[in-house]
Image (cartoon, rainbow, N blue to C red; front, side, top):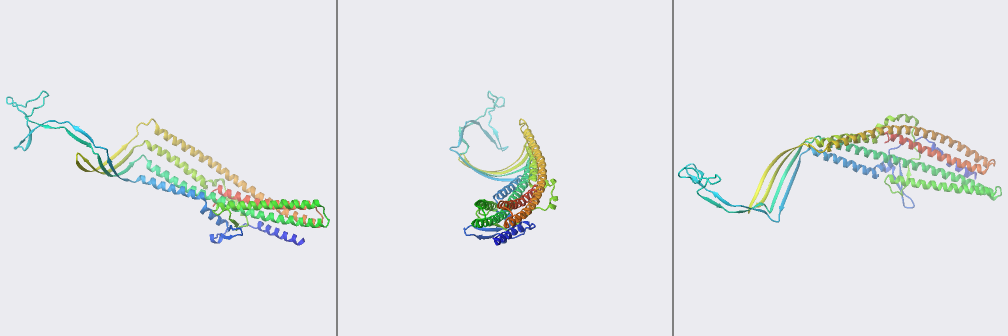
Length: 499
């Protein structure tokens, strides 16, 4: 029994040394070295990974990052599309018209005056009837001259629209002045592109933050399971002693039952700790793109925490480095540019257009092929729209005010968040110190109660209580480490310094 007791205390000492060591620096390992695969007896793949490897895998496989990357690519292409509005547009068109029948009309005929050829002048002269007495043209009742001869012009059936025809052309258009619409739209596209890039980086920051939390959660739960396993061995050792004492009649059955009940409680606690660890591993695997049934083993056994002297590097004024603050700034700038865009709607619009067209058709049994060049300058200016344009401008101005107030409020909230995060880190640091002190006291209390029980100077209840307090103190110490790590990362993130 004494030998088993010594073995348990050696295991306890090993865990204490692991948790009490100084923080370990992050090593930069290649993925082949840091992510080692194994396969357990159940067929699931096991991975040993470091924090850096987990971060790299999260950046590579996380769906939210891929979604933000696609949004960023879309914004880049939109910006490039808006730039083309500065350039002339060239279009080619071709049309073929087929109608059920040609459009016809009848031209009414009549009598046409005749002309005589003057060989002296070489010109045609009207063949007017001259009064031989007055030597003046004879006029009809309407005052029109009467001709000697008339030619009959019969009625004519004509096609004025063909049954079929083909047209094609090339059109070149170039905006000259659009009231600043093209320039403003391009600038808004540039701001949108910057915002999408910031959103991508912000998504990566959030994913890395959550990945680190999941990683250190696994590390902390690994340590907790080791503590519960040691606790279980301690209670099992006590149960063996009580059983031996009961067998020889030195203790009553109540004490044996008390030890058995405690053993069952600790066994359940140990099982719950292992289940929690398995769930935490699944959550981490999902975040880094591995199968959720992967058996993960972390390369780190220590939880990194912020040192006291590092706290001075953070201030509420650091909010301007935050990516979400910069995105709100860009959103406010876009709202400002939108005022110019709406104002451009009631400014003059000037443009040029040039085209070269070809027409081919048949009309009145004759084939026609026409080519022509056209050039046109266009000027437009809205005069009266029942106040629609000015209302749109006022609406854009109100939206800009809204975004400005939103930005101001966000600045205040971000500064408050940083101040709260600094306080939270200070509280968690104090909690860690108290938990470490409590663990030291619990270690000593357990040692004394164990020694006293060996010589019969304390009760079984006191020994079991000392073991329970030791386990709880150890669990509180691990929780304090994890909470300080979480608070430190939140502080760095709130100041825009989480990388």
